Length: 124
Length: 241
Ligand code: SF4
Ligand code: SF4
Ligand code: FES
Image (cartoon, rainbow over all chains, first blue to last red):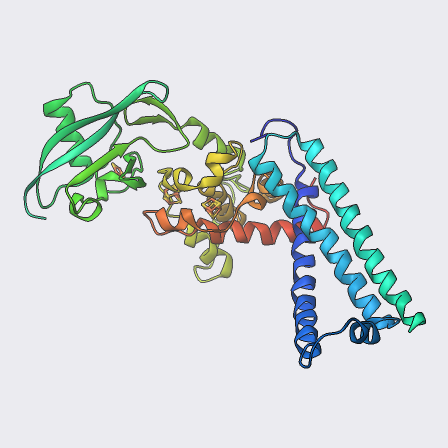
């Protein structure tokens, strides 16, 4: 809709597309592991203690979910950017800013969860 | 369908000012939609504007919206597209109506040019012939998309074209893809820059509305996927601006 403000840059758009595809592959594999773990973990009930016991303080899981958050922070805002450009009349620059903020927010919130779970390990 | 009276609604006027007018036409078993429109113009409504040329599915000029779908009217038999004997004929979507069923197609053709849908020769008549092996991968990829007749049917069926007026559209991108695979062409880099980006191949939703509607059974979605692939490689090599 906001067709005419600012011609798009071929290199940047292609890189964003590539980043979204690569992050999609990473997310697909990780969601598989994530869901698999959930299915395994809930086989006899689910308790907070059990989750903390497994994930808390475990560097492997912290790195796993750290990468998960990073891939998400890349993947989702690029998609939202395309949707906003297509269905709203917002100026390009505004959309880019909003999506950049979304990326930062997702990364920050995700980082906090990963950090706090990791810290919980030292309490347990 | 044996012979029967058809009820035909035809768009008359322009985009801003127009309406459907009903005509009754005797339909014959072998009538095409174009035959019906021609009958209306010859016998019922001499001022009706529409476009056609070859009548055999080669020129691509007779495309209209028939019962909600873009079609080549010269090759659409009434018995197939309107089994109930009711026809609603409108101009193609996403194009400016000139009058009645004729649309302004310059935007559509401009986009073919904008996508570098033009051959850039690398040799002249002093050179020997280019030898392109018929079964080479690139030749086969080019052949898959080459039969486009420029009818604009895929373009009219594409929702993205309707929403995003600068989107190059399936026909232009399909044309570009055939040239990307033309080893004789000398403007590959320029073309990849022209088709990359959110007005080009990266905007496509890959839902294949264009494939569904193309009367030549081409697959613009596959061509666009090909462009996404080669532009991704090009950007990694630093060939996009
Ligand atoms: S696949 Fe792409 S070009 Fe074809 S109709 Fe959908 S958005 Fe348009
Ligand atoms: S790709 Fe098919 S539908 Fe589109 S312009 Fe070419 S022949 Fe027509
Ligand atoms: S009149 Fe030429 S394709 Fe229909």
